[in-house]
Amino acid sequence: MDEAQRLLDADRPFHAHEVLEAVWKAAPENERELWRGLAQVAVGITHLRRGNPRGAHALLSRAADRLDEYSDNTHGIDIPRLTRDIRTLAEDRPLNTPVPLNLR
Image (cartoon, rainbow, N blue to C red):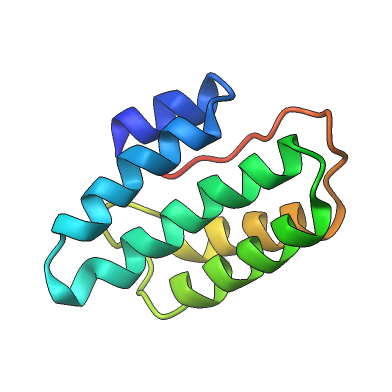
């Protein structure tokens, strides 16, 4: 997760997605949706960067819904804060502004 966060901090969301997707596919069954949701966040940010706010909204909203299924502090992630940030990002993030998103 640290590598994905580093890539997000460097404004490289597609690369963060690739890292998270690898974790998702290798995760135990009971954690797969968590990692899938995090990967969807990175793809949603990629859509924002590429000028597709509609696609970004759909992916970010799905990701937040998926993450809501996990308890607070799963793998050290503040899930309620993260899902709140994701929903805010899905609704009103201008395309060219930095995307501060902390997966920790």
